[in-house]
Length: 114
Image 1 (cartoon, rainbow, N blue to C red):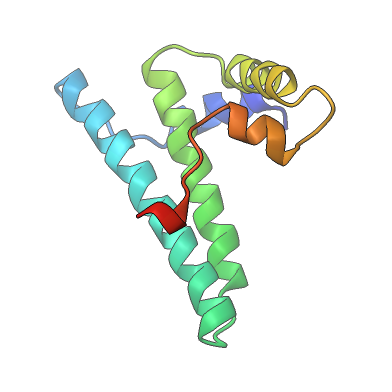
Image 2 (image 1 turned 180 degrees about the vertical axis):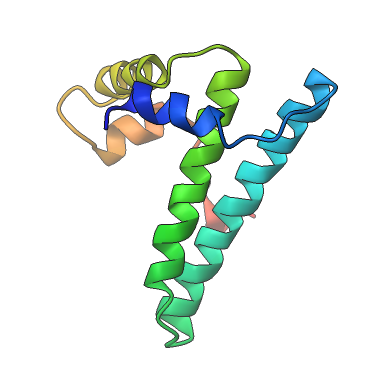
């Protein structure tokens, strides 16, 4: 399956809303919840000795569902979104990730100056 097929198939499983505002609010809040679930499963796996790898995988799938729904809402091609992201990252890290390039892309926090 390619990403276009994925995005189209997922559209069939989405709830229909009367107001467009409710639709994007649902998708935006939903992706936040799913990423929180991913984080919780990682924490339990590595800090509580409670293997949640299946939960991580499941919640990553749910997170991607919300990504597809947000792209559908804005009529964006998910492949184009990903291609633009790769171009941005290639520009930011032309020779691969480096701490130096990462510092240039955002403000670095000096924890000793808090």
